[in-house]
Length: 288
Image (cartoon, rainbow, N blue to C red; front, side):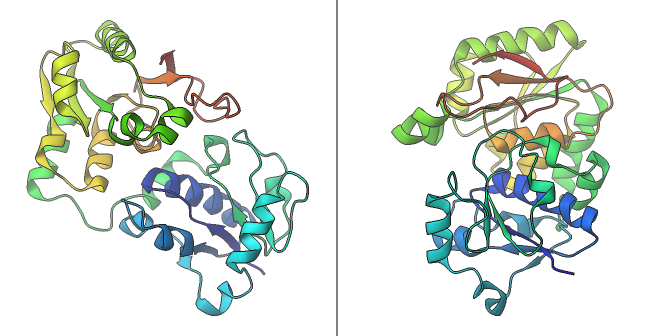
């Protein structure tokens, strides 16, 4: 039987969405999962081929297999995706909402998109196993995780960086306001007894200057690798996330039964992009 073939696009969080979609579809069909890494390698994303850092059940497409899916065909079929789909061996995502037709797509097509919806996923327990790190925590990192498990820990992710400095990224995503974080902190203080805040940010100075956090530990100042930060976010009992697929995954992989997750609404500033199918209904949405 033909495998499920998924093209990887974007950074770590995006690659995890694409893997999760492909993993469920491959499991349902009883076939292998192949990942096409060419775009990620060519673009040289900051996070690189991040999927390699996780214990995923997938193999990378071979050069021989890739010859059936040329880059020229991918670009042309993508440009025409709203008019013809599938086309030239590719099945492209056309909107950011859940695609009901995907499950019945013809076997052997390369699936290309971001697939940012938990509705595409296998069970959380499957993903928590598949997305365990290949390299375990160091003793120091494990101490963090144990401390987080022993208190009412709340991860706070503040993404600034490219969202502030890149005009294109800012127009598409927008950036979470000070008011969002202050309301989110107040909501956690209302819901969680004696919360301890663990801060993950590419701009910790901004967080210190703008957020009135008590009992705050700035984990990002440790300089851990991105995958360690992601798993430490998931190790906290609760999460306040940015409009970032990175901290979204930190919240989703959190296995604490009574977790509270606060996320910004809308997720995107670009009006043509919808987030209505992206996150579980029981996550708490606050104005961005």
